[in-house]
Amino acid sequence: MTRYRIALVPGDGIGTEVLPPAEAALEAVGRRHGIEFAFDAFDWSCQRYLAEGAMMPADGLDRIRGHDAVLLGAVGWPGVPDHVSLWGLLIPIRREFQQYVNLRPVRVLEGVPSPLRGAGAGDVDLVVVRENVEGEYSEIGGRMGRGTAEELAVQESVFTRRGITRVAEYAYALAEDRGRHVTSATKSNGIVHTMPFWDEVVAEVAARHPGVRSDKEHIDALAAKLVLAPGRFDVIVGSNLFGDILSDLAAAVAGSIGVAPAGNLNPEREFPSMFEPVHGSAPDIAGQGRANPLGAIWSAVLMLDHLGHPEAGAELLAAATGALADGVSTADLGGTADTAGYTRAVLDRIGPPR
Ligand code: NAD
Ligand code: IPM
Ligand code: MN
Image 1 (spheres, rainbow, N blue to C red):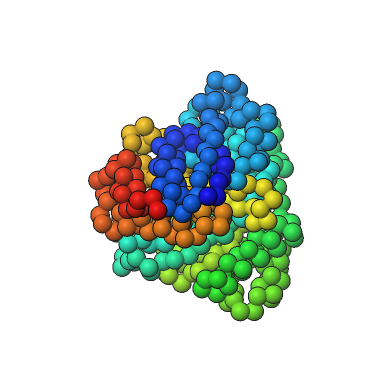
Image 2: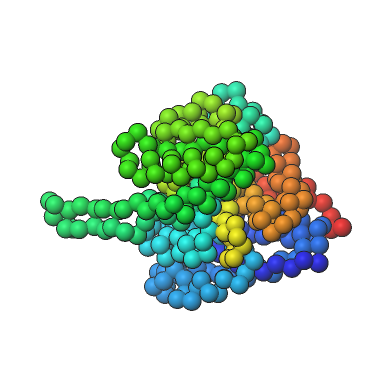
């Protein structure tokens, strides 16, 4: 029996609705593969902020440092400014634990209607590898002259050779196991000064992987091509902001942002990695029991892969996609199941303990 300690941070809104299905699915599939999970739940959220003045306790990061992984729902709620909730919880976890790869696979799954004309299951199978700790998401800068006619806001992007190299190396190594094609998202046509540097460092990494085809696309053109011909892509590597935007776009192309998973990875395994759906807290549907839990469940699959249990992960993903293929899906995918109904269908397909 292999045992893991998993920190659960449901967070806000539908985050609290999609994590219990992921937890139940992990327990069910774990029973078939000799894996036991000890879940420690943490109530870190906007609600906690409103009650206690902080998203998490001062020693919050230390409380989860020793866990094998973190499973997170979503962070953010109306009434608490997003910069407060995000810089108070999500971003510190990504940075403290050097989760410099944000892995975001996108696939058109059987039973999921893509909004693209003619795109069916298997036509889109790509992974966005997003740089996750530097770039445009920097703390350097601020707002000045509040309320005056001269008011301004400045934020410096920070790109480092080490940061670009390691995320690009991850993307190329991944491509070697997949379709042997990396597309780098850039904007190097002279406007954004950091991007020629990004291109140079990515090209150095590319030269070390001659078996992988390398492309680069300006982010604007890439956005259009993702809609017009998503089947052309294999691994897309991008900066923090570009990768963020592309992963929502690609998820929508594949049917719904409710489906999309993410692994915030510390590839060296020096620190825990964090798994969370790509979507947010969805205040517009929170509390109604109709959120799609697949993004969270698929994130749990990424967690199983990361922990070294790809067979268990594949079985869970097959159960989740099997339910879709049998016509059980939530409203965002055009179905009639609620969160509980779809979760039941997934659990039913996992099979009995072995
Ligand atoms: P969102 O992802 O919460 O919602 C966008 C749209 O997608 C909404 O219409 C929502 O109903 C729908 N949607 C999202 N997930 C769904 C699901 N599982 N099933 C069905 N429909 C789903 O994005 P937003 O509205 O930009 O952000 C809301 C809040 O969440 C903000 O506070 C934002 O900062 C936060 N946020 C957090 C994370 C995170 O924790 N990683 C990610 C994105 C947004
Ligand atoms: C995501 C989210 C976050 C991000 C926000 C909520 C800070 O959009 O995980 O994709 O931009 O990283
Ligand atoms: Mn995002």
